[in-house]
Length: 194
Length: 194
DNA sequence: GTCTATAAAATGATAGAC
DNA sequence: GTCTATCATTTTATAGAC
Image 1 (cartoon, each protein chain N blue to C red):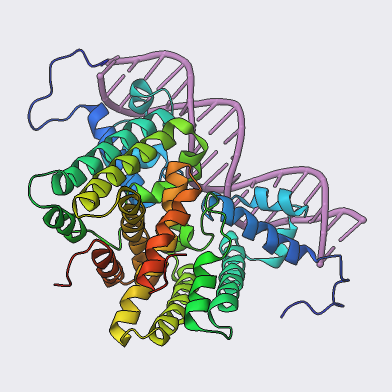
Image 2 (cartoon, each protein chain N blue to C red):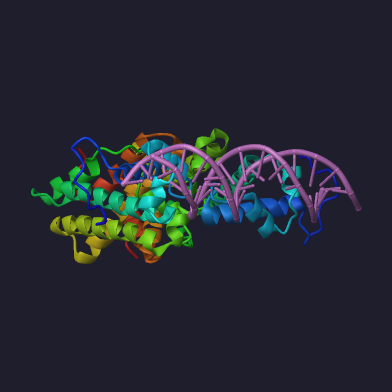
């Protein structure tokens, strides 16, 4: 915590906070490598030098924004997979969660970003996100009655289907591709066809 | 065909050909957006101005290299999925084909590349590749006895699993993730566990 | 803490010799 | 067709006023 001034008013975000949120948006749209400091400044409405007052370099901003994005994404997954209710209900909720297929996954796309993959401190949040998500899906599948090994393997297939569904939707320009791919994932989870 | 000179000797490639191959390699490693003309020149061993003699712009080189990569990739898929033999044997061959999981898919990664996705002429090869691949998998699944609808949906899941398996392997830094994800795909194809 | 102005380096592309 | 030299622009980052 370097922010020692008074807390920001409900509506007015600090320059630092606006920078992080603008970076999160831009990274989700076009990745870290393709996002320039200038774009972050323009979208955040913050002046030139302020970025380098709050962050030593472009990489430090990226790290802050990526950690934020992966934490937010994992929290959302917990909302569907870790809540109460039956394992089948939780798996259904996860697979049926609303997704912008043509936008792609803000976390998954980072595996194609050379800046992220070349820096272990930028790749670490990705690994934590997917490890956490796979644990949640694995537990639900184990509760479904699958063996531990079987639950682990199928969780990998289910999460891969979500990620690959985004890839197919974007490549085909067809937002129904993800949804169709997920039907097979439901079958693998032991959920009846609706 | 603008190349009107004598065909290159078996071992000596033209500058144009060396440029395309170097671009293919670099795009596979780091994407189009992150690859600079300078990097292509260095890897190909070709001099500065020669790139712009053969290609009007960076985008034109990218288009040529991407078409080449997607055609080569689809040809490889045909080698496993369109050959003779039983549908189960062909599906097994496709799912068991050697893949460098940590390198990622040279075609799939392009769906995260802002330069590719922003230009319809660069995105088109991706769409053709995945359409062709899905057709091959769908046909094999139909031969397995699945209904047309069921074969279409499961083909989407199978190809998504391959693509997502690459994403997971890279995010986790674990090349076995793809292989484990593919076990679920085999189950969905009606192939017994080995 | 925030801003404007600016500098060093890299990028995309061109000119012109050979 | 291929090369070296060069240029305009953008990118990353810093200086210093307020």
